[in-house]
Image 1 (cartoon, protein in one colour):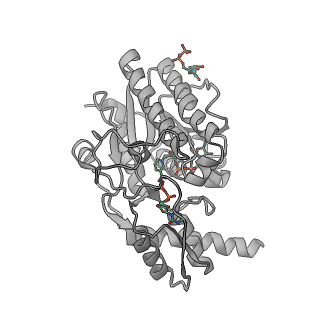
Image 2 (cartoon, rainbow, N blue to C red):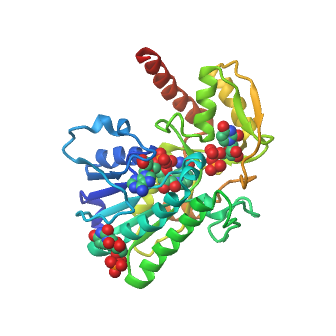
Length: 324
Ligand code: NAD
Ligand code: UDP
Ligand code: UDP
């Protein structure tokens, strides 16, 4: 029996003030662990963990992961990195540094403690793929000199660093390739499609569709993603990944807009804008490996996940109106 499962641990979550990180922090606290969140608040917010203020097992450290970090930990989830295209393209050099130098520091920290470390990688390592759905064995089709390269190539380099630390130093690593994830606590001005469409629909603003809206994405609800990340961390040393985590059901961006309009009862109209450069035409994970090794499949469908997310944004917009 793996006794590590029962032990309460000191867990570091880099990027823990962000969307996925803050939900992960909540679950780890619920599980009884001692959690340190390291975040420079580039795209995250203290409001995402305000409910944990004063909690005896929660510590927040404002720190840029590009700088070395010397703390005592038993396990590390490395999520620090801007994730939305407008955010990661605002300071592309910083984005690459965060993936590369940030991963190096986290790996150095893990090596010093001999502890497990999980990397939040991304479907973007596949670029604009020629294979759909894509398995982990697909090596990718990435433009290394385009505006998305800072994120895609940074994350690819991070993956290679993780595997080199495994081969060279015997480190226990886990690499999750996360596909589009959504839910409460995505910053309303984050720029990603789900938050944009919901906020636009609730405000009655035009819904901005980039391109013709026929490009596809598969959307995973946050609770499912956190569950997948925790399961991956619990696997034995032989399982390093990479493992795709995401919802395998794809929708076109136009369909997503129509669903958001229907669920919010909005009168917003659709407004078509230019498609950003290198925007992938299709994206959908093959999650066969996650099913086989983690026994994991997403449980929350798009309709239910959108309804929960809409309820969250309604609350935010109402409280903003009250304080305005
Ligand atoms: P997010 O922007 O909400 O959170 C990222 C967090 O990292 C923020 O709190 C930000 O302040 C922090 N951060 C950024 N640079 C940092 C630095 N140099 N030092 C310390 N902290 C830093 O994004 P998210 O959606 O929660 O994404 C979390 C992770 O998951 C990212 O690594 C992202 O690449 C990955 N991911 C997310 C998705 C998705 O759909 N949400 C998809 C694929 C991969
Ligand atoms: N590092 C860190 N915290 C630690 C140990 C290392 O931030 O507890 C950083 C260290 O400063 C270095 C990186 O992690 O920049 C890689 O460390 P490693 O020991 O693997 O390599 P080296 O220091 O030999 O370059
Ligand atoms: N998108 C859109 N309108 C928006 C924001 C995004 O049509 O207001 C499109 C974007 O061009 C992409 C898809 O929605 O085709 C998903 O974009 P997102 O930024 O959420 O993440 P990506 O999958 O591109 O990383």
